[in-house]
Amino acid sequence: MAPEQIVVVGGGLAAARVAAEYREADGEKDVTIVSSEPDPPYNRPPLTKGLLRGEQERESTYVRPREEWEDAVVELRLETTVESIHPDTHEIELAGGERLPYGQLVVATGARPRTLSIPGADLVGVHTYRTLVDAEAVSLAAEEAHSAIVIGGSFIGAEAAASLRLRGLDVTLVELGSSLMPQLACPELSAELADLYREQGVEVLLEAELEELTGNGKLLTGARLADGRTIEAYLAVVGVGVQPNVELAEAAGAKVDDGIVVDERFRSSLDDVYAIGDVARYPDSTTGRLRRIEHWSNASAQGSHLGRQLAGAQARYDELPVFFTQLFDTKLQVLGDVQPAAECVLRGSLAEGRLIGFHLTERGELVGAVVHGEAADVVAELGDLIREKPTVGDTARLLDENLRPAEAVAG
Image (cartoon, rainbow, N blue to C red; front, side, top):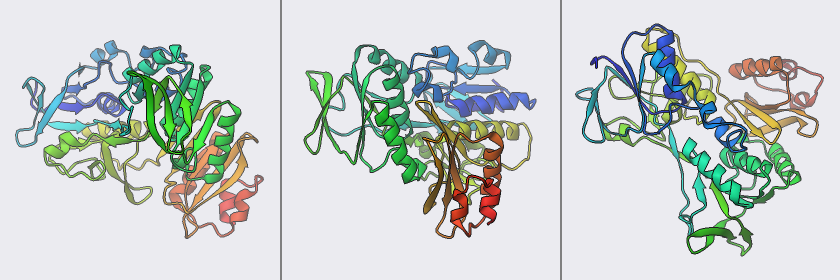
């Protein structure tokens, strides 16, 4: 292989996008994707939705069929583990000792699920949730289990709980914190979501500490909470967050800090080594701070941008972070950066079928929004406003459903 080839480590969406976009931009170097997974790059959102509900097949999650990668002249090396990066010689070393040279190396190693450190965490029937293999294992287990416990009320946990309930299982969702979907940073909306889940038959336990998972021999049969309550369950899905897979880059000398630290062109501190997707901590020009984002749209946008950049494009990365989720029939979209917000002003409600949560800083700056049931032009208008970070003088106007977002903010 040519020594100036582009090597992409990782088999997720970011890896797929960088390779595909590089070819679309007429990049001529050899491109190789090295992935430890058995499948070609795939989309993760269906794993907790259509695939878990039994509405989609495995292959439908693929970014593109295997044969199309051959047509794009991109080599896929699946079920292949990278042991180390050698920045001094511009090579990666694979399990077994083979070395691949690179001209540019893209690290898109993603993240892995955090695990539980409580008794019973190793029982048969306890599953983390990240890969296609994980999703199919949970889906298979759900065919036999009539009851399930979902541990964690954030995106993965909430989505999995909804899908398992739609499959007819009795589901208990256990969240250590005081709200469901805390990343939304909108307590009033979180309370509405908890009510929605209870209406759908999910038992939602907030501020509940899991003490142990219990079993009959090696098989899961339930759980015990710190307050003594017990839960029957023959399937457990653990969704307590992820940690970025930085070890390869860190061992090679790259700067890491809750992810591989990169600049505005996704360059790491190592020459000719880039990082994108869930593993990358990048300077978000739309918020003015370093961020690491674990969502589909971010992986897609960063991968596409870097692919064009490696083919010679010079445009600045300036994507407003956006992500979405579907909980039962409720679709939510989040724009901007809701974490610095000190207040969420909620207009509308889930019951009404439309809502906007305006996220404001202590100074009254609009930095993010959560949206449900609004037209595309309203969502686009919100995105433009968030980029400008206007200061809201009269928050009462935000509640007026007769005002467009720009009109409400301007007042």
